[in-house]
Length: 362
Image (spheres, one colour):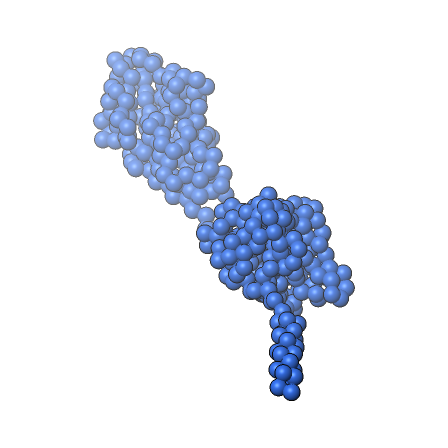
């Protein structure tokens, strides 16, 4: 009788153990450090969307080199939104944020569209090598022109499931969220007002005594010189502008006889020393030439650069003496002049007035 009791107890133990085998079931662990650095949070986009996926496996994924997968499953109500057009995606694993380790493998990716209930937009990254538990991995997904990533309406839940897969079963899985909003861009406007500054350093320059013995140059002290004034003199024009077309500086002259050239109004001997190209003003011959020199950040006109190529005489009509083709912060050049007379040039006080204007081209 006692042996029978022992048998029954043993059977009960066996039954309990058997039941335990059916009750306990393996569960996928949760991925950690899961994030998606999506480049746009705006709704209803159909192109130009990119994802940078990052995750840390809780469980090693060891299906074999190139056989593992990473899968993203999007909300059921968003069919055809996250995958605007099904197809291949560009996969890169460089330049990752947060110092993430590049997802290993030859890596391909495809976007498939869900259709109806229990069918989901899905991105599958394939050809993934084995993954270590506890390592932060990252990968970037962008359009190829065939597979176009998109975004749903801003009413979506935005809850996405990410899974690792060893080509047989899912290993780890977790949910994360992307919040889609109506507009993720802020429009900024501003106005840069047009600017133009213009100055002339000396408004009174002179030749002093002009003789047939030498060509004479103007100086700022009105005494004149037999040699050209140093850089920065006799009168410097300075200009700056933010005009997209730059600035143009023009010049003309008008003497008291309403003509061009050095004019003496002495009664009975009215005389004009005629305007001429500066390089044609020579010893012993009458001529009055205006030119520019010492230019900085501005281009002298070929007509007034005193180099004998296409030089022109100043006139009573505005002519360009210098210009820029774009904005200039500090352009400058010197205005100078030289004069010559003959032995028969009448004595007198000769004068001319130069008018210089600057125009910004906006």
